[in-house]
Length: 75
Image (cartoon, rainbow, N blue to C red; front, side, top):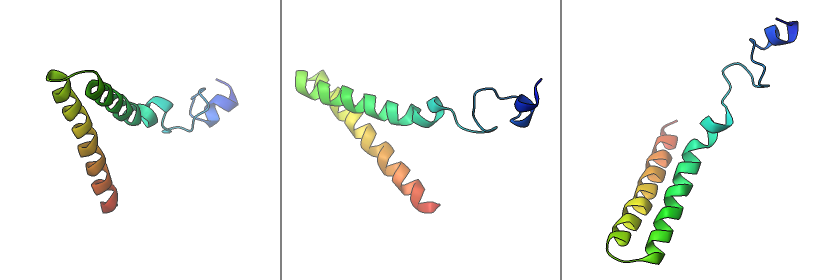
């Protein structure tokens, strides 16, 4: 193993040891964004089950955001 790899713990990805990868950082924002898009499209395209899907996805986004905001206030 070269000195360079040894210096950063053998991690050749250019990250610090214990650093967070892009997927770990962006997974929840992507999930929240996808849920928002699904909810908004469902609200636009139909009634009945689409309304339920819209309420559940958009309501879930609000619940997740309020919980994250509440937890951040504890820090």
